[in-house]
Length: 470
Image (cartoon, rainbow, N blue to C red):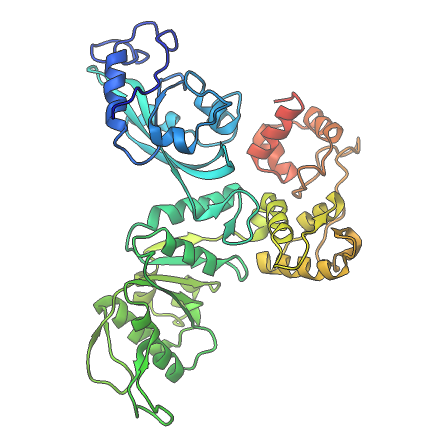
């Protein structure tokens, strides 16, 4: 059954609605041409919208209406940045990357990962923008495709990856780029940064999501044990091998093989691992039959592999095989803005039979000032300990264990040093008066002020907007 697709009234946008003939770049498609374009976009499974050069939403397909439209919030004829971000100005003027700016320069597509406001709350959305050119080769409109990124949550969640900071989003954007491909992925980051969660997210966003996700812990395995675990063994291959054993490579058929802490693989085994990756074949220990492997490789380590290669502790050829697509996983101190979100995730999503806890602003600020050498794992352990001492369901500073390396509390409002805060604070820990004082006394750009306060530029913009200082 055919249906009418909403289209912005002709009054919105440029006065001359022609995109077929020559004209200025602000010329818009005729209504009939726009309807024809939307009829085509209706066949797209992903949400799509059409924008004019002034950021106005001209039309949207049904998929967009189902996933992103809200009954009480009209969007046709409104600015895209107001609908998706609740901003009063374009994204690139609010500290974000705006794909329209790059598309204007290149006349080609651009893709970026943003946090969008949706009917369900804030969510990670991959945005791809493509230009529509008139006969003179000028941009007269844009088609935007939006894809929900389900591998991470921008809201408190009891499972999976959680975060909204720029450093976290950069890693998620890289993950979403490589997941559909078969390239080996190398996850680099400190212990406790969630390497296994990222590896699982790569698997679940790939075409192999229906296959097994097999984890190989490379640390602490001897050469003999590592080979047996990875390739399996035949009956009688060594003392105690009373039956044939299937290796983890065989278990991972059709799925993803995750080699955690690959920097710990013994040098002698690195040769066999390289042969497995290069030829896609292997033999069980004690076997003569060559078996075919079928897996997507994801590896991870906290060790400096490049330095190990230079020192001869890691094979150069293996390094280049596994590092086709490296992704840096940020340490928790590099994404302090995510600490409140992570804390709420841990406290609100308790195990069955355990009540959810809350935390005071003072305790939250204390957590945000810590450097977290153990990263997210350390944060979770601290909260689990605090839970045992919070009899009334509220975590206060007194319930937190001593956290080494805590700098003194910043004095933002002090007249002698109004802009000396260099650590990130809870969004509610800097009151309006202190922030207003910092804005008045600080000499520099908004980006520099955000860095001084330990906030992302986007967070600072939201605070300034709320105070009428944007």
